[in-house]
Image 1 (cartoon, one colour):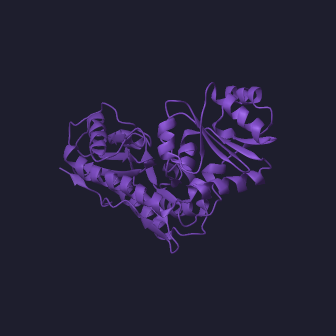
Image 2 (cartoon, rainbow, N blue to C red):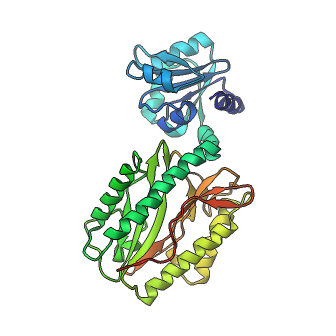
Length: 355
């Protein structure tokens, strides 16, 4: 963890602070490896502290390396205040994106030093994944791929979306996932035109498209894949939608490489869909970063000017959604490499027609 501590110190100095406080659960785990639910990280110019209560001190001693473990005796911020006073801290950065107004008032009340709001410091570090992180993400993706193979036998006319969703969840947990990465989306027929159509009690009908968007949360990291299948032969309009999304996704994957911006990556898929006459039916971004959270930076979006770099893990998920007709989304998890990109998800993207 020493390297991360030094990276934070360097970034904190840019923010003109001489200490940094981390209270976000995700960022706390990233920096320390601690999997418990209570604690804070305080990094000063010369020392690094992990503060938690009596429930977690033994766990912290086992998991947290490179930090001094401090057991809080009263309120956490009282312990932080004591350390700040002992260390002579004059200004401290805090994670403004993860602090409510009430929590900010508590910081003002308890800490006597200058408070400096800092945005995205740890999130920026998290964007570039190490080889070890990518290996864990690959395991999470593999669980999702196996889940897709498994679930095909359950998708048939009369099956309820919620039952498909539950079976996906149960299967991924049996395969080692702690949970799904997010509320599983199973959307059939007209509901497949809902980009975030979380599973309902609707029964799947003959000739319908069924979109499945799911992922496994495994050892602190997420996967996120989407596949759309047909139950029986779809009509020509639905087939056209599927084929267009499929080719748009392939076009984007072929063009992903270091140095292009999120805007340029988004355009690879969006321009193709627009050329085919479906532009107004593709309303979301082409993809997003993924790691400890299912949505993080960098984005493949017409708003994102950030350049892709080796080690970034992103999704590529164009879609077309036509109200009262149906829709399609196809999504892979991808790591940016020195030469281009490597697709982590392996499930087929050819249209499966399930009888």
